[in-house]
Length: 611
Image 1 (cartoon, rainbow, N blue to C red):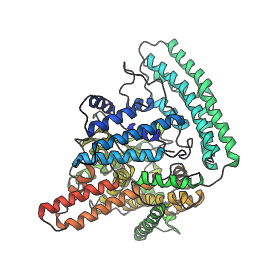
Image 2: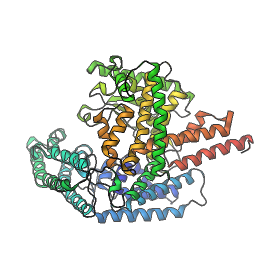
Image 3: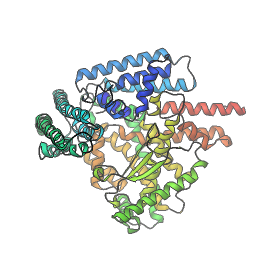
């Protein structure tokens, strides 16, 4: 699953051109901790042609050595990458932690944890399913080639053709890895094979001439100066020939391999089913929660939270007179209420956007009372592009560019406005926008005196935990749901959704729950449709542990706040607490806790308060 190379793509793909520029400058400066972290970041980034194109800084410049290439997917390269990580981690010990304090000590701890985590994951020879319905080269590379590779002149178009040919190599290398996994008992569940086959067959259906790698090319060539129509046709014809020669046969071979695995594949959902699966899942839980919680502890936590949230949801439904035989039925009744729907036309979509902007305006008007640093980066609220709305989630956030050239953006999927009823929108806006991801990711970019890696590291338990934590702040502290019981119900449903994840993820991967048992449980507790839940559960099957990060992070932040409130009494200032959490950036939860306790201790010493 999240192999070392994929983790780096996820992390460093967030960087803007400034990282490479600044890292090159640091390369030639006297070496300190921050400079060392920048140097190893650059060294590891240069190993991936795809990450370099995601950064975009040296593509199509005289320094471009990579944009006609794709990454190496062999076991040998994976081992070389792991050894580089080990060397980078060993080198970090020359800079600390002894003798460090303040931001430098935090930088050392965060970087050490990050590298240790990548090494732990990289040491597993078998890391889930290399090709599945939502990730792997057969899913990721087409979008990389059509969306990330920039075509601005004839040379970059030639490099696109080079990468099309490279795609064939990647498919061959990946097939070898899948075959090696199969020989050691690592075969995806039957339903993952079925979904993967559907996606691969769909991608090559219609042949090379109708393949997206070819059909998207004419529009990308249309505005290139110096290319006449004959040259454009030549590029398209050559692309079609390469896709026919390299890409389609690669998919056909992968399809044949998956078809050969299907007859003996089992229906078991959990990662326990593969050799070393239990140990691998423990590593994934540690990576995603940044804690040492066991699967049993995470499961029990989820059950307790589900029970608490269900009671609160039931109280609202009772008070509002919503009838139904079950919690799920009552939630669906709320969603079906015409007053909770926006018309599924252009006028209705405009009304939805206006409603979201009103929510954001209310949040921002109240925010200075609860947050000290208000991000200067603007937030835009826009529709998910129509070309991608079929596969996009209900809403998501993209952070502003590090160089300020692009604002933060909250995208709302408006393919069918009924998918996002009115009562769910305030919490979605708060989570993805302000004061959720927009505040956290924008604030992280403002931190001074740290290496650029710390400005972009995600640490899901922290970032998703923060966004879920402020959903509660909006209710308890900011009072944004006064006189809006259904909006509060939407907040609770969103929290229930994350609590259920703790139960079903550990249920499948540690307690041997079936796919169907997990679907039934999630439908019953959230009121989501069977189709929505099935997609979610099948995502958890191939990304073990990731879904647990949200609730674990939220509850950890709530515990830290409660500890600070008890310790400081009337000296507790919520704005200052939020400043401490936000303005140190994403990090493992234990490091956040250390920083909060240092803040508490400092305030106590200032006032002479006894411990």
